[in-house]
Length: 111
Image 1 (spheres, rainbow, N blue to C red):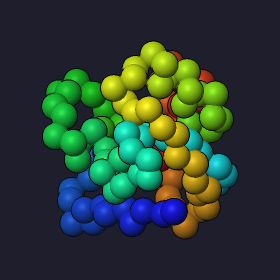
Image 2: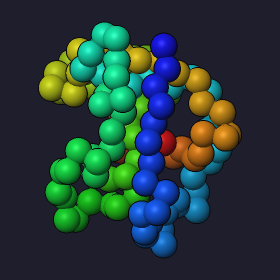
Image 3: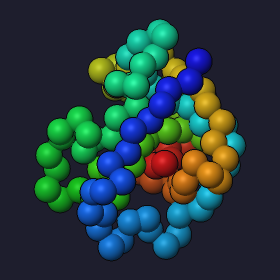
Image 4: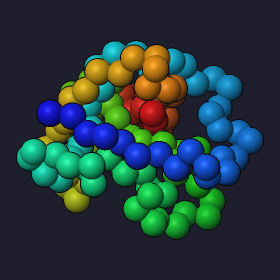
Protein backbone atom coordinates (compact mmCIF):
# COMPACT_ATOMS: atom_id res chain seq x y z
CA UNK A 1 0.00 0.00 0.00
CA UNK A 2 1.22 3.51 -0.64
CA UNK A 3 0.12 7.02 0.25
CA UNK A 4 0.20 10.19 -1.80
CA UNK A 5 1.88 12.75 0.41
CA UNK A 6 0.82 16.33 -0.15
CA UNK A 7 3.30 19.13 0.34
CA UNK A 8 2.61 22.83 0.23
CA UNK A 9 5.11 23.76 -2.46
CA UNK A 10 4.04 27.41 -2.29
CA UNK A 11 4.77 27.67 1.42
CA UNK A 12 7.67 29.90 2.39
CA UNK A 13 10.34 27.63 3.79
CA UNK A 14 12.91 29.10 6.19
CA UNK A 15 16.33 29.78 4.69
CA UNK A 16 17.78 27.05 6.92
CA UNK A 17 15.67 24.34 5.24
CA UNK A 18 16.86 21.91 4.27
CA UNK A 19 19.90 21.98 6.55
CA UNK A 20 23.26 21.89 4.76
CA UNK A 21 24.15 18.54 6.33
CA UNK A 22 21.01 16.70 5.14
CA UNK A 23 21.64 13.85 2.72
CA UNK A 24 19.71 12.22 -0.08
CA UNK A 25 16.84 10.01 1.06
CA UNK A 26 17.97 6.44 0.47
CA UNK A 27 16.86 3.20 2.06
CA UNK A 28 14.11 1.59 4.07
CA UNK A 29 12.47 3.69 6.80
CA UNK A 30 9.81 2.98 9.41
CA UNK A 31 7.09 5.26 10.78
CA UNK A 32 4.65 4.89 13.64
CA UNK A 33 1.08 5.11 12.35
CA UNK A 34 -2.33 5.03 13.99
CA UNK A 35 -4.20 2.83 11.53
CA UNK A 36 -3.89 -0.46 9.70
CA UNK A 37 -4.12 0.11 6.86
CA UNK A 38 -2.43 3.48 7.22
CA UNK A 39 -3.80 6.60 5.58
CA UNK A 40 -2.46 9.96 4.43
CA UNK A 41 -3.38 11.28 7.88
CA UNK A 42 -0.60 9.11 9.35
CA UNK A 43 1.98 11.02 7.31
CA UNK A 44 1.50 14.63 8.41
CA UNK A 45 4.26 16.77 9.90
CA UNK A 46 3.91 18.47 13.27
CA UNK A 47 3.24 21.71 11.42
CA UNK A 48 0.50 20.10 9.33
CA UNK A 49 -1.03 18.79 12.56
CA UNK A 50 -1.23 22.37 13.82
CA UNK A 51 1.19 21.86 16.69
CA UNK A 52 2.73 25.06 17.98
CA UNK A 53 6.26 24.89 19.34
CA UNK A 54 7.74 28.41 19.08
CA UNK A 55 11.26 27.34 20.07
CA UNK A 56 11.37 24.29 17.79
CA UNK A 57 13.50 24.15 14.67
CA UNK A 58 11.16 25.05 11.78
CA UNK A 59 12.75 22.39 9.55
CA UNK A 60 11.98 19.70 12.11
CA UNK A 61 8.41 20.96 12.45
CA UNK A 62 7.94 20.55 8.68
CA UNK A 63 9.80 17.27 8.38
CA UNK A 64 8.41 13.80 8.91
CA UNK A 65 9.79 11.57 11.67
CA UNK A 66 10.92 8.16 10.48
CA UNK A 67 13.34 5.55 11.81
CA UNK A 68 16.24 3.89 10.02
CA UNK A 69 15.59 0.59 11.80
CA UNK A 70 12.35 -0.99 12.97
CA UNK A 71 13.72 -1.24 16.52
CA UNK A 72 13.72 2.56 16.74
CA UNK A 73 10.03 2.72 15.84
CA UNK A 74 9.19 -0.09 18.28
CA UNK A 75 11.06 1.59 21.13
CA UNK A 76 9.48 4.97 20.47
CA UNK A 77 6.03 3.37 20.18
CA UNK A 78 6.47 1.80 23.62
CA UNK A 79 7.62 5.10 25.12
CA UNK A 80 4.95 7.22 23.39
CA UNK A 81 1.93 5.02 22.58
CA UNK A 82 -0.14 8.02 21.43
CA UNK A 83 2.10 8.25 18.35
CA UNK A 84 0.58 5.07 16.95
CA UNK A 85 0.25 1.35 17.49
CA UNK A 86 1.40 0.23 14.05
CA UNK A 87 4.59 0.56 12.03
CA UNK A 88 4.60 1.39 8.33
CA UNK A 89 7.64 0.51 6.22
CA UNK A 90 8.73 2.31 3.08
CA UNK A 91 11.69 2.68 0.78
CA UNK A 92 13.02 6.15 0.04
CA UNK A 93 15.14 7.08 -2.95
CA UNK A 94 16.90 10.40 -3.68
CA UNK A 95 13.89 11.65 -5.66
CA UNK A 96 11.95 11.62 -2.36
CA UNK A 97 14.07 14.46 -0.97
CA UNK A 98 16.50 14.72 1.90
CA UNK A 99 16.89 13.15 5.33
CA UNK A 100 18.92 13.87 8.41
CA UNK A 101 19.43 11.93 11.65
CA UNK A 102 17.84 14.04 14.41
CA UNK A 103 16.88 13.81 18.04
CA UNK A 104 18.15 11.81 20.99
CA UNK A 105 17.31 8.44 19.46
CA UNK A 106 20.18 7.57 17.07
CA UNK A 107 17.72 5.69 14.83
CA UNK A 108 15.42 8.73 14.44
CA UNK A 109 15.60 10.57 11.13
CA UNK A 110 13.74 13.59 9.84
CA UNK A 111 12.67 13.28 6.22
